[in-house]
Image (cartoon, rainbow, N blue to C red; front, side):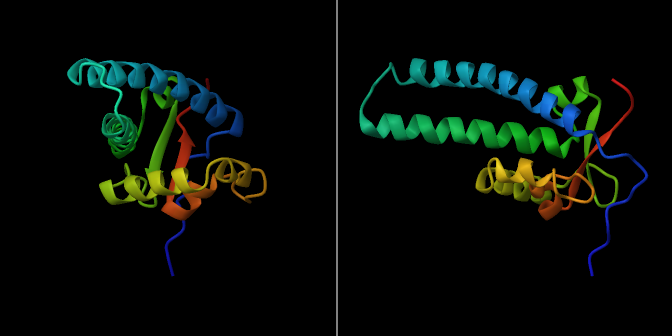
Length: 141
């Protein structure tokens, strides 16, 4: 039997989590512009199929590293702004493994995971429920 998530921190409201997701998308877009520019500059804007596949792999890697690194430290810039923190079952920041598992569930369950929060008894996203993590509120905003 797995231990349940501690309730010492209140789960962040859906409105705060969705607002943080929108802000996160804007930050990620800016990061991807820079990563794209670096790749195109280093490859001298070659358009052949191997370079396109390389660009896609590069951008996917940038996204993965960005989220896993941020989640391991408990907060991204958007989460800091909205006073939300990602915690694991032990109320600590998630481990590398737990962060990677969360990312895989986010990728595999787009949209479904967020809609799950409307029927979940604790209003958690499905990827958080499956990865053993939780987004908690650090106070009023």
